Length: 186
Image (cartoon, rainbow, N blue to C red):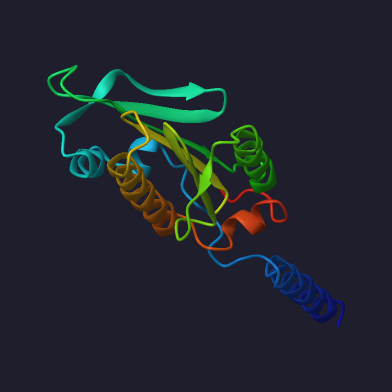
């Protein structure tokens, strides 16, 4: 009889531990990739949008105070303006709210900025940059100089491609879950 109760107790403990492992609040697929600027705006997309043959600069991908950036330069060098793309993404150590704050802090200082509708969750142009906040990511792109309608259209095309890449890579609610469920970054 004692052996029977021991087996039943062990089965009950195993069953309760298994049940504890299934938390109804945890997302089924909660991990997201770490994005690099060259995956957010590819060399091919940048070349297509600018109508220029571009190559990755010799600097490659660099960390610029939390914004991971890369620069594409014309081939041959100097024949056209460079395209720079940077991304700051929420992570285990940086919340989506902190990324939003960095985005918003940069916007507030640009009194010459203009909002752009339909790209990401929030978007503005403050020449020479177009800045997008989407799914816990702050994307900053510069391409060329000036503030003509052609320049604006080029920046909008680049930002649209970048926001689309972010939306393809990061589930819609992942940034919201980042602050409450721990590690969601792969």
